[in-house]
Image (cartoon, rainbow, N blue to C red; front, side):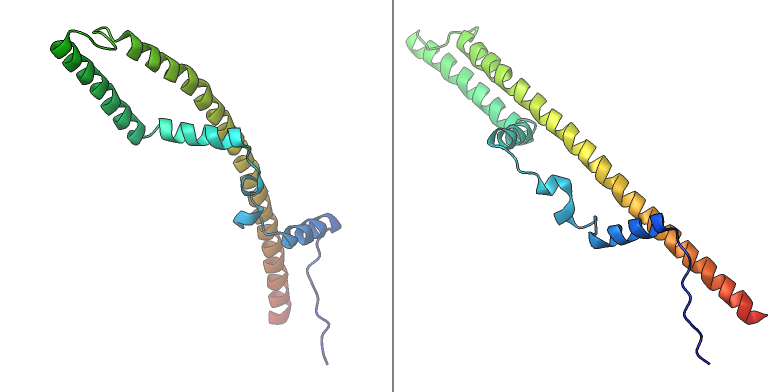
Length: 155
């Protein structure tokens, strides 16, 4: 005598969620919303400038440029009593102020985009956690079903 295979009962709501969650596996990077996002030229530029502007490469290269600027001006002044930017280095201050004026809003744009990335990641993580929770519930139902069948068989 062949017994009919019984399946654990799930609500229609749970089964529709499970079937929907099996169609697309959200852990794959191809499905992550951030990787599907098309970036504009401005967004790419802001990300690059913020990344470069916050790096040691930028700090060291800017320091070398400043030191070179000052040395050249001091040498020119000592040798020829004339220079393109005398000691208080007013032109250098203007260049640095302009750099800061342009760099600050670009970094703020990049930080805003990072906040957007964090929100997308949080929503994505929440979806994955919900899927894992549904899968755990399904496994617990299956385990409970197996326990009941084992109890019936042992009697």
